[in-house]
Each structure stands twice: as structure tokens, then as C-alpha cells.
Image (cartoon, rainbow, N blue to C red; front, side):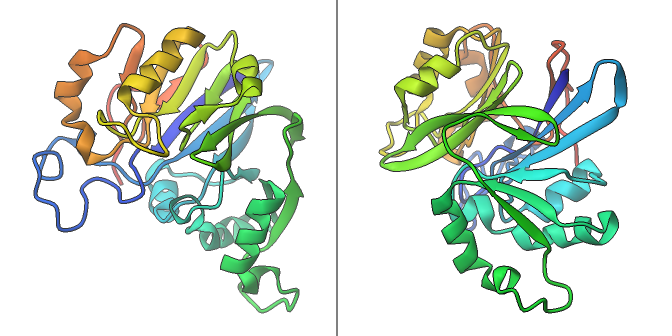
Length: 273
């Protein structure tokens, strides 16, 4: 299988620029310093038929609509949820557009705890009342065991966001982890032999519930993926162009619209709406 991972958003919960902030990063004119809330999109195709693509969204944050429009996404096979924080689920209602076009429910994959949160946040979609125009959603429970989505095997990567369980995902040799401050022993085991690793790095200064830059680089050094990209980045990290110069070979800051291919190719410029 050929795997492509698009970074739909690479910012922290407030995005970049931050409302009311006039720091150098928030005032930057560089497109690389404009970050929507963190999300990603896996596209998996059979090498014998590249037109047969399975498309999975990881998290539907507040900027989900804008991200789908920017990337011109026309269909979605499933949504995979890492955890229930608002910056990762708030845009779920906008999957309605795919319901209308695909004339089917959208499959959601989430832990039981995340499902409970989604039921609270979007109670009207799960009430069973069938009100016209509500999202059509089909919920699937995930645990720490590998699972199949539209014929594609997905390996969950259990991590911790302080004490909150969060799920990263690995498809083939491409792994995506966000909002982690600690990798479980099982995560270390499942991240061996990676080609591509995307992992969160909030800022340079230590943080209680996120890897900072030093910690993320330490994880990368230990796992030794062929390529690594940093995401969930705040304005406190510094200017993209400047801090990028400090990164070791094989590691770079992700940016909104970055397309990473399992064959080693990547887009060179951020896309715009």
C-alpha cells in the first residue's frame, strides 16, 4: 500500500496567531507561521490501483471545515479520534457535507471514553430522533488492539496527555501522535521501524501535558525513524524559519498543508484556502 499523510493543521489549541497576541510569531507574514488546530489526513491506496484511495481524517477540530475546503476533500471514509478535547472534536458537525454527497453515514472510530464525550457534545446527532439535517454517524469502538478501517489495518499507539489516555495511529510505516507527554511501553514497541513519525512538540519550555522540543527530539532520537515531523506547535516555539535551523538532520517542523508520502516525497509549500 502507498500511504500519504497530510497535516491539515499543526497549531496548538489556540492556533497561531493567537487572538489578542502581538508577539513576533503571531505578527509574522510567513505562511509557515500560520497554524490551524492540529489534525491530519491519511490517504491509503493499493499500489496496483492508485485510483482506489481510502481517506481517513484524524480528529475534527474547530478548523475542520476550513481544512476540508483548503485541501479540496471530496469524500471521507472514516474519522479516527485521538481524544476528546475540544480542539480535536469541535468540528464534527461539518461531516454532514460528506453525508449529503456520499449518501451514507460516516464511520467514527473512538475509545469508549471519547464516545461518551462526543455523545455529550453532539447529543442531537446521537439522540435517535432523526432530526432532518443532523450528521449521520456510525460509531465504532477502538481499544489498544489493531483494527481494520475500509480494509486498511490501523495500529493504535497508546500515549498519555498528562494522565489522559490519547491514541496515536500507525498505518504501514507512517505514524501520527499528538498531545502526548509520555509514551507507554506498548507505544515504544509499536513505533519501532518507522519510516515517518509525526509527533507533537509544543514549545521549547517544559510543559506539564505536552512534549516540548527537547523531549520530542529525544523520542525521535530513540526511535530513529527515517523522517520525523513536529506538530501541535504554539507561538511560543518561535519563528518557523529561525527555529527550523536548530533541528537535526531528518527532522523538520510540520506546517499546514504539508503532504508527506511514504515514498519519500513531500510538498514544499503550504497550501492556502
